[in-house]
Length: 367
View 1: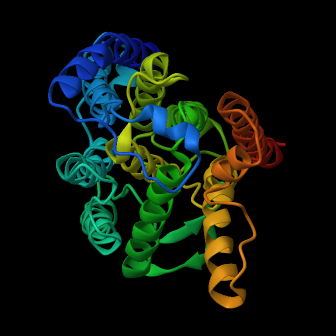
View 2 (view 1 turned 180 degrees about the vertical axis):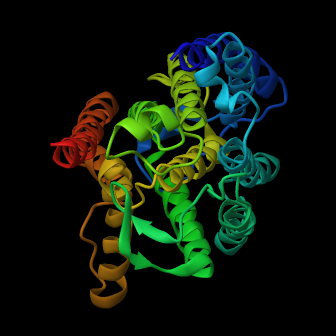
């Protein structure tokens, strides 16, 4: 637990005090967020607010992870099994950083062109595909000394579902789909001050709790596995908990500056990075299908876009005033703060249900 707390504390401090530096740097570079003319009129007042703020909490998380490992050297021998950086950390932090790079390219092009046209949709999806395939192969084909891989050949819900064996190639495809879906889901949720940041904090905190719980009931802990009939077959759960906690705390530090009225936006840099990390956490904790519930707000907002597109293309009519869903409520007259807080409540309910299912499964098995 000490390593997780240290990682979270370091991430929060770096992000809290590093974000103002990012604000000054991106403001000096005139990296202001271009605002689309189509949309709520209130957004025009945000023109010029610096973007690419995701850089701040991505960097904070990476440094915090290193600090967490330094803390591991003070732990008892039983807990030093993950003292060295692992393949799990490589996959999770790699997804965070490189999905963030794809987003950074998109943000950079928007700033350079002084409009909201960054990477094309195909270009953005191609970048996500390359990152997903690369780290998916690592997650499925690079085992640890005990043969455990970061991802599993089974589709998982709260743990691997034994009869949903899709093989290594199928699992890579599932991995890519999860990363791309979650990445775009967080990106679609971004758009109001603090909305995606706050929702991501809740989801990341849930994965930090789940990762630590799996570590305390881990099959890799021979003392626990020998004495108990049930344990979690995951690789490096302490790494999972440490990275998720660090990312959540880094987002809390960033939210101080990103909440309404935002001094900086995370941009696609932060949104795609967070989505990639959350998708990686879902796969690494063997909770792929459960992530649909835990990240329920992202799913709801993504589905609002899908419904809008299908409805318009098939009937010529729109279901919502505007999609994603948060903009529908803006055009309905809700204030931005009301929308954000209420959507955070929805995100919290989804996370609570997901954690409840996760823990109830453990009780059912142990009972």
